[in-house]
Image 1 (spheres, helix red, strand yellow):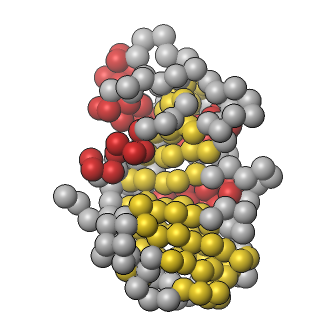
Image 2: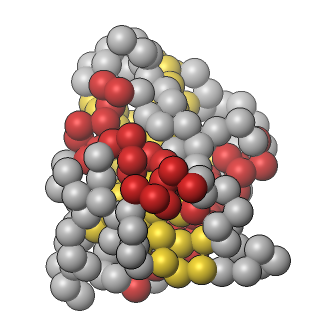
Length: 226
């Protein structure tokens, strides 16, 4: 599979953004790779392009973590280089580049890794983009973890196996959510900000659908390997 030309403005276009964290479980990859319009690598995330046989359209970042092996695999790769002393994450800059190239949403592979600060910042960046005008939906994938942000304008749907642990966490103080496909009822549930209410629900089927009446909610799945 290779990256393709930037999408025309106004079309539904999904960007695949490669971040530097852990790749998703192998069984989760096929639907994540399907139907994407462009591939943007964020610095060290370029290694995932090598491993997955992808041809990126663009490499973005300060180049402090990209490997020589990954660079050698893609000679003449268009690159947007930024200084090391910067205010944004490489992933943040890559998502901004994807929007400029016409993407209307993004899937981030390698969104989560060993650093808690990076993982939290990635989720908060996705929350900010979900609340933007127009909204820019970003789904986050790394190892067994998947996260999406639900707002009144952006319902969230997760494809899961029955028994998958699914958590709903408030990202704002006025979050009210309803969900189907979960063992413990979530109907007009007010999720307090800074509380554990919503953690460790269980999927009863192959899909979990979440609607938000207000606020913003992180919808997080912990997929089982195998």
